[in-house]
Structures are given as structure tokens and as C-alpha cells.
Image 1 (tube, rainbow, N blue to C red):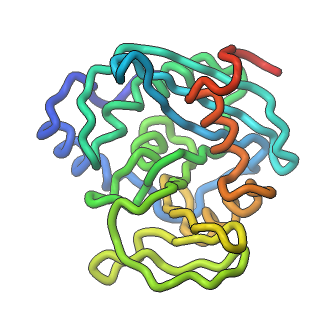
Image 2: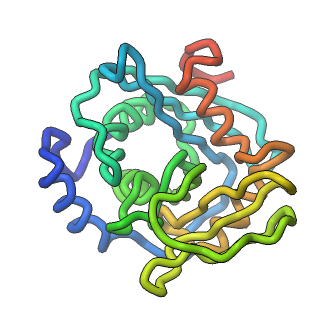
Length: 226
């Protein structure tokens, strides 16, 4: 998939690209019918020198795994918090090119709008592809929030300078919450609803769990329809 910018950039240049592209993020619902949802996750091999991206496509709402695409490529960008998409997305976009069935919605393992410059991985991927996207993070990158009630589906706004940048969502009782944020072409409440619809008996949505298995190498590496 072609890109709007070069990936051969310095961290300083990457920050400027984020600032330029963040105005293209669509913060309201602009979704068609959702038949396929995809989890996106990235792992690293060979001491971080190789990036391993996995995209797992599941049908919706049954959440049956339909296709997996894995791509390995050389890691060309350093580990810089807040700039992880420049390290990870080149491999993700190559994995996307190999899919036979494009998803209608991405659920990315990472942040979207809940980012210091409001342009995390889910925003970056959504803007580059034009596909609606949600950020689903296991940890908080920025912002503050009130305690979340110990009930499945309970959530609190994630705030930064009085702006709601995401939601702290409890998907299981007695389990730490996750961090949901807008990626592209979706509003926060809709993003929360889809994350809950994609979550079964585990803390993380099935999209994220499946993509993580392949990105981490815990499932056999292959590419194609299942």
C-alpha cells in the first residue's frame, strides 16, 4: 500500500509528520456495514532488528478467524515512545497488501487519539488506509482518569487538559481496564461498543488476541485464508 510520506525520517521529522496528518483524522462515525474486523499487532525478532507485523481478520459479529497476514521486514526506526507507528507501520502496511479480504474496521494494539499529539498508531493507520480504526491499548500513554467501576462495560473518560482523548474501559470484572481511543472515522462511544462486541471471555478483544498470537510467534506463521 502506498503512503503519504517517507518512512526514512528522523524522530524530529516524524513528529512534524504527526502534526501535519492529525488534522485528517475523522472523529465522527463514518462507517459502512461492518462484516470484517481486523486485529493489528507487531512484535520484534532478532533483538529488535526485525519487525514482525500480523493482521488477523475475523468476521463480525461471529468473530471467526478468516484470514491472517504476517510480514517481516528490517526495523529502520528507533524505539521512541509516541513515535511507535514509524517503527511498526511499514511492516503492517506490507501485511495489509497481502490480504485477500480487507477489513471494514481495524482494532490496533496501541493508542489512537489518546496520544500526546493526538496521532497514535490507530490514527496513523486509519488516515493512511482510509479504513475506520480504533486504538486498544493495554497501558496508558497519556491522560488521567477517575476509578472505573468494577463492572463489565463500565468506563471513565481519559482526560488530558480537560479534553476527552479516550476511554478507560473494564471488559472483565476484577481485571485491569483497557484504554480505548478513536483511530479514524469513528466516535468514541461507537468505538467502545465495537470493542465490547469483539470481547468475549478475555480482557482483550478477540481481534487483538488473535493478532498478538501471530505477531509474537505463539501461533504458527502463515499467510492466507483459513
